Amino acid sequence: MADVQIAIIDEQQTKITLAVPGIQGIAGPGVPAGGTQNQLLVKQSGVDYDTVWSDDIDIPGTLDVTGDATFDQDVTIEGDLTVNGDRIIVSTAKTPTSASDTGTAGEICWDNSYIYVAVGTNTWKRAALSSW
Image 1 (cartoon, rainbow, N blue to C red):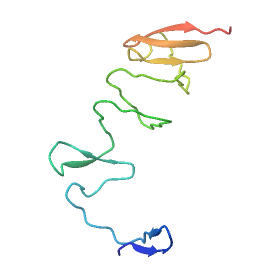
Image 2 (image 1 turned 180 degrees about the horizontal axis):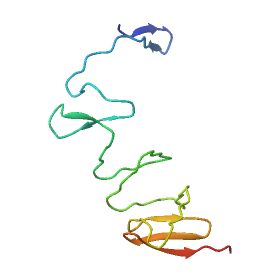
Image 3 (image 1 turned 30 degrees about the vertical axis):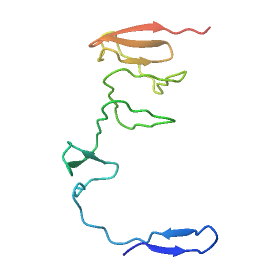
Image 4 (image 1 turned 180 degrees about the vertical axis):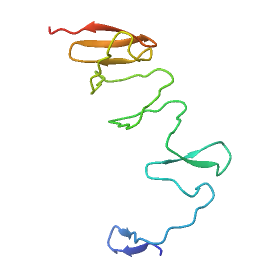
């Protein structure tokens, strides 16, 4: 079923389009069948219609985010991360069980007493926190 259009004739030539639910169209070139909620349609190459449904997306170059962004999966950044704000918030505390607890170099976490930094694989150092 096509969209139903209602035209209101006035000085501004206002037109309102009312979308009426219809039947689903067939898959066409570049839009493969399938896909699930929250998946993205991603180009696989420079070839026309070479697309695939994906849970992940690789964004080469620069991605500028203005405002808030929420990610409910892990995000990997290959390169520098620049934050043009005045804070970074790590909302969940984590306390390594020992200086040799599982960790990846560069991992940072905190609890009420310390900031922890993994300086190598399964090698942690910590700095005490104090009031001032």
